[in-house]
Length: 176
View 1 (spheres, rainbow, N blue to C red):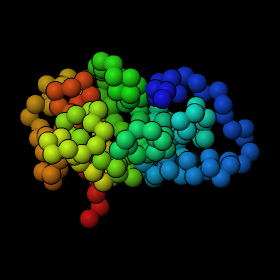
View 2: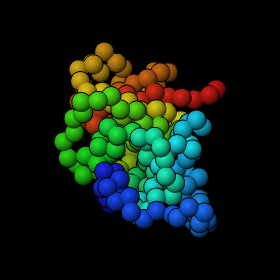
View 3: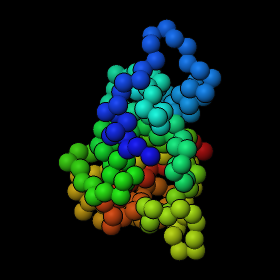
View 4: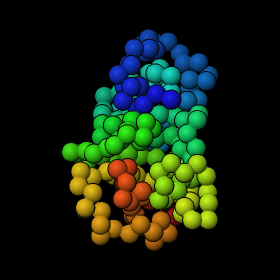
């Protein structure tokens, strides 16, 4: 599995202007774009997991379709700090940031532990959460998360993976 940072560095396999995407690429593009808010969809770069650029964008967001091998993940759109975060998480490397980062997962996800960044499935004690549409925020100073709830069922934002390098704020975006 290549990191998001590596994927960005490999922007070499682009679809020439005017060339139609294959049916598979078109499905991957649609899947990736389902994570982004409508106002960003025509501005994001979209890449598949083999370094192919499916859509060139003008914003700092890169959207990816559902990863084929990562348990519980779903389509996502990541800004620069989140792309660095994803590279660190996927490679189990330390992570800190000097910038606020915002990511979108507006198609929801398949589930993850709220306390263990590397849990591969639900257990009695790992607070497994299947989140609907949501935004995620990383902050430069993890101490700013101390006053926030870690309860994913509190009806609002909560901290996921608190106490790890990958701690972030989950902001549910359900339209009910």
